[in-house]
Structures are given as structure tokens and as C-alpha cells.
Length: 80
Image 1 (cartoon, rainbow, N blue to C red):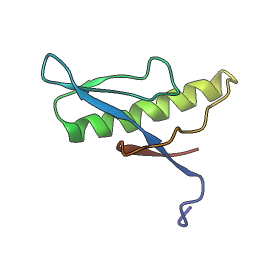
Image 2 (cartoon, helix red, strand yellow):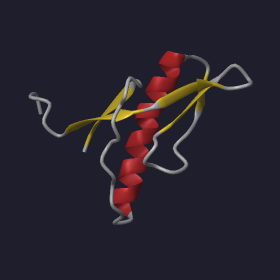
Image 3 (cartoon, rainbow, N blue to C red):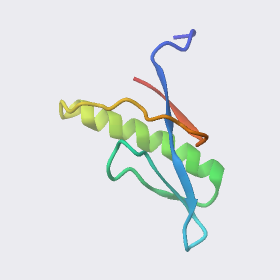
């Protein structure tokens, strides 16, 4: 979809962990977190994680919530 239709921007929380890694979560998906070596890798992994969480919910006929408001947080772009 060249016009961007069907794309959603999901805000992600990035925080340094004690190990010096970064983890992130999606506020409307329980259990959505992972670790990475740096911010760029964290965002790439967050996009993969988000896609898997949405596909998993759809595969189990569960509702997929709408993204929350970014409020200055970085976002991952996902096609629904």
C-alpha cells in the first residue's frame, strides 16, 4: 500500500537495563519485551516482536488493541 493505508505507529518504551542493554515494551500487550545491545537494534527487534504479538493474537482469534498515544516515545510501524 504505497499511500500508507493500513499502517499503524505503535509507541515503544526503551530503557537501559542493569546489564547495559535496552529493553522495551508495548503498553497494550502484556509480556511484550526483549533485550538488545543498542537503541537501533532494540527498535528493530521491537518491530519484529510487535509483528509476532499481533499475528499470534490474530491466530488465536483474540482482539488486537489499537496503538496507544506515543506521547514523545519512539514508535514501531506495523501493517495490520
